[in-house]
Length: 185
Image (cartoon, rainbow, N blue to C red; front, top):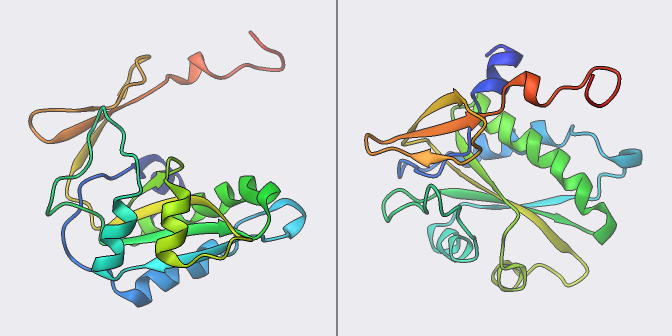
């Protein structure tokens, strides 16, 4: 897929087919993502790959889903997760970089994803036996998409799931966010 198309078509997927993603494919995604930039090339990140159905359920229960589009119903939940952790608290911001790479590498392979920052971290750390000296930065839910999207140029920034199963994704027009040389320019 061409780079611009890859970037413009990636969406936060919240409905998934219940088809397991091959572990080799998940490992390929992480292998690509490890090339993400980080401050001073410190790479203070690690990833816990979760694809066991019982552990996936435990991860699912720790996530806060966006109310405007709702959480996935039974039979549409993620089939895998990447839990991105950092070995140093100040480097959690760097983890956003690797998350973007994970999202795009997954999308390039036809895998849908959803990025979570709202996580019950202590509970999840206990489930996954993450040592106390590590910090859970983000969780990425994964699965083959079972929903469609429609991008609209609206100033309203609320995502809406329509009755016919299509999620409307409003994006701000370029002119409403780009300033040339100085603010307001």
